[in-house]
Image (cartoon, rainbow, N blue to C red; front, side):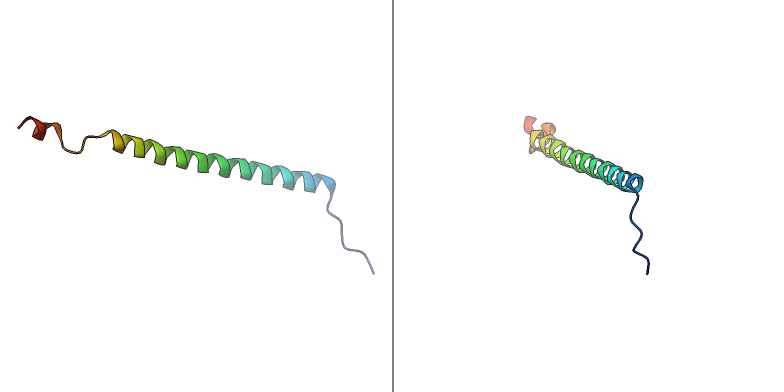
Length: 57
């Protein structure tokens, strides 16, 4: 009987690097999504409730 083949150290390093890159990409994407939502909310809060044209009359 032969033992199960062991993963090579180079393959394990490559898998770890790929996982780290994917984690960094997902973290950056989530951060940008949160920033976009907060930017939009601050934009909407700063807008007046009624248009300026109606305030004059």
